[in-house]
Image (cartoon, rainbow, N blue to C red; front, side):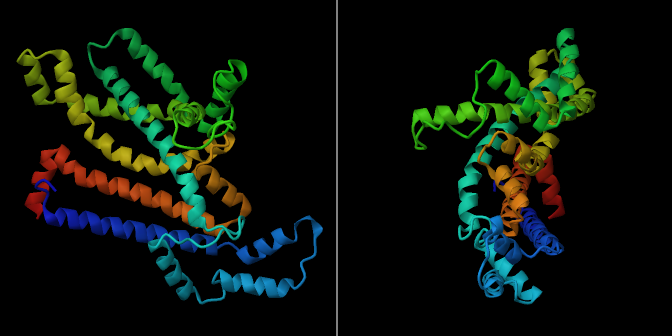
Amino acid sequence: MGGIPRDYIINRAITFVLTVWIAATLIWIIPRLSPVDPAEVMLGRMASGGAFVEGSDQILEQLRERFGLNEPLWVQYLLYLRSIITFDFGLSAASFPTPVSSLIAVALPWTIGLMLLSVIITFIIGNALGAFMVWERTPRIWKVVIPTLMIFTSVPPILSGLLLMWVFAVQLRALPLTGSYGLDVVPEWSLDFAMSVVEHGTLPALSIILVTFGFWTLGMRGLMITVQGEDYVNLAKAKGLRPRYILYKYMVRNAILPQVTAFALKIGLLVSGQILVERIFSYNGMGKLLYDAILDQDFAVIQGVSFIIILMTAVSVLLVDLLYPLIDPRIRQSAERVA
């Protein structure tokens, strides 16, 4: 790992395993605090519309046995741990007998694509604007425009999504209203399909970017103010280095390190924030899948989607922890002294 001490890697790996285990345990415990019986929910769907289900007691017992609800809690917990290790989350109650892993496999690529697009764009724009707010050579007009734009940070993503839908889809008719891709496009690896995906993903991504870039802007502004008065920055100015070179090499490069950590943590928050955005745009991602599962009281899907979101966040934090010493030599030297 490029000179990173082995103890540092082991400690981060242990932290990763403990984080995932504790979070997975909470996911298992919380649904069981609900008085709702998943087997009764499934039986209720069979009897929807006033239909009579013959042998309902036997069917209810079979459903409980099929989902392992008749087992002691400690057995259910061990079976649950085995299932998340193998990514076998059982069967969906709302889409019975479709496996939960199949539903996640369909929704996950859409969420990852939308998330990466919105996070990367927001990260770049937000940090750039935060740096320009502090840089003394930034035109004064931009120091007025940037804070004004941050009023959108207080707007919920669902409202920004509705506003963008009204402007670009209803009034201008420039972008599609809902969906992940056009109904007249075959989902395959082709240029037409890719263009359709980008076109349909633009409004959901913009609705997230519009309300989240201020988080990065304010964070970067505070970090830049701290870095601005450091001795190495004053020395660089005294040496007559170009202002843009000082901005990038001495100020942004040192101030952005905490933002990298926040980037990993933001992934989990962003996925949860995409739930309503994906729902109003009918975007077939993890957020829409989780929203529908909550409405249907589909506990297996809720547990599976929640675990994947937590795992994505934990993996992101682990990767950042392992990359951090390579970005900042001071962290590597500190880890070597501790080791």
